[in-house]
Length: 310
Image (tube, rainbow, N blue to C red):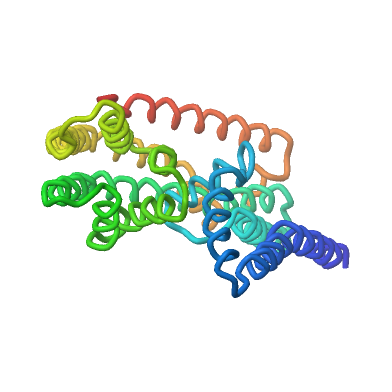
């Protein structure tokens, strides 16, 4: 009964927090949107400006919340921070509760729960890294398309719209968002700076710097973009070579990092009575904590060794 009561109480708290963080703000946004979109030409015109100003001035959060939202955007997910945190907490709580009740070891339930809660964040970070890698690979094609459009006589905003329509994810949607923001009233320099902030890729910052410099000083933007595209292709080639050279170190790091947890799970399945001593005695808990700290230090050290700056 204590376990059931604890589960129900925590569930009520989590659902209440979910309503306050996710459901209530979404309802307020929908009401504000319905109020703005009245069948009046003047209201519709002001609504477009309001959308751009809100996107520029309203913060999505502070500190860790904003960083997490940025990571979600980089991964191309439509999930909000509240929904992500709610799913993460519920999955970890349920997994920890199952281990606690099933094996009767509270510390094992806590460890498993924390481990399961870390999985969504790691998957999200991996998805963001893969999407940014794909963005770097497609970005020279986008710059070439913009340069050809400029040589054909188009202005920069229509060229950005062409990239958004012609190229696939992730470059296409990012440039479409860039075009939509400046099209709905945000100044082009502000939209470009927001693009460079949203996409944490050095090549994107080069592109924004080149465009803003050309707008201030003048010059042949299509020629600048052609040179920039060639430089980016060479940088990406070097990056692939670095990835190949460091492949052995990364595989070694993965094996050394994953071997202790896998052996611990196998030992627990083979001899659960012997392994339970690690969770039920003070000496065993101290050994687990020390092993976890040393494992974390080793992973960070190996990560620093195999990370090559270029």
